[in-house]
Image 1 (tube, rainbow, N blue to C red):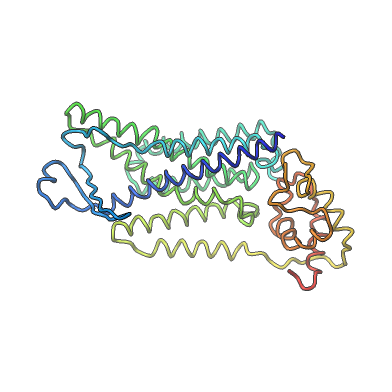
Image 2: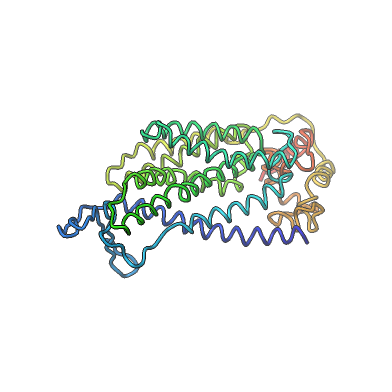
Amino acid sequence: MEAYIVDWLNLLVRWLHFITGIAWIGSSFYFIWLDNHLQAPRDAADAGKGVGGEVWSVHGGGFYHAQKYRTAPAELPETLHWFKWEAYSTWLSGMFLLILLYWYGAEVYLIDPTVAELSPAAAVALAAGFIVGGWVVYDLLCKSPLGRSDNVLGIVLFVAVAILAWGLCQLFSGRGAYIHFGAILGTIMVANVFFVIIPGQKQMVAAAARGEQPDPAPGIRGKQRSVHNTYFTLPVLFVMTSNHYAMTYSHAYNWAILIAITLAGALIRIYFVARHRGNASPVSVIAAVLILAAVAALIAPRTSATSAGSVSFDEVRVVMEHRCTACHSSSPSHPAFPAPPGGVMFDTDQQIVAEAQRIHQQTVTTRVMPIGNLTGMTDEERDILDRWYQSLEPQP
């Protein structure tokens, strides 16, 4: 019953996380687009009132006229809309999922004994430390003299992110390392909103309410952090779905793959931001495509040099019964799984044969199964499954 309740919590909170994430990222992308499409006001009266830019748009059967003030209007409107709860809700639901799956289920999803021998308590403590420490280091870098140059700061932040990706992959399972990489970037993003962007906006609103000219410095700091957030977005979105792609996180060089895809995501976002401004060069998006193509080519499965000798199906069945059916059965015996993951079952010979390609891909090509090698599948057993698959005629 406990695993069943956890599954329902997973379903409901993941759904909430998905919805709030769309709201946050959607509003973030919209305001980046809006800022980069502003034109000088055509009406001199608007310019005299402090309007710095405006844009006309049409959507959903109506016309919209958005204006941005250089600092603040002379008189604040009665209703002022804030964009913050989308970010907070996304982070809170995401952290709940992280705790539920990767901390509460640390032995299943976070720890891989072949990577590092960690107790659940030690693994969770390290994970929490990385999340808090990631924000502290990032914030200090932004407040340091490096923060005065966006280009220099950007290079330093990428190096720091690359070191982070490598370090996480030396401590946790590939899947656990990837999701914590995303959690750290996501925490930085929401902390930017909570500690920098919203407080800066409140200072500007308070000054305007007092009839004073707002200090532009908080707005400048908030703008810098907002730009960082938009470049973090695509890498975080990749990580959110990465558990579906074992070819990345289970690879021996999973850290390098993560760095490459992070760079590609940032380059793609750079292109679209520049495109909004009307001066986009295709160089960044071409570079991103080449990076992704290179990763795909370098990690492509190679034909294995299997040892000679036939394998009987009896040997295969023994491996499957000892290492796989604890989870992949109509009635899993492992307490973490109330139902077979993905609906895949190996109770009968027919089910095993029907899933031959998937078995080979997951246990031999990517070696991601058994998850965290919970059941202790040996290299010799993987070799049995490999030789059996290679002997199938025709190969699936």
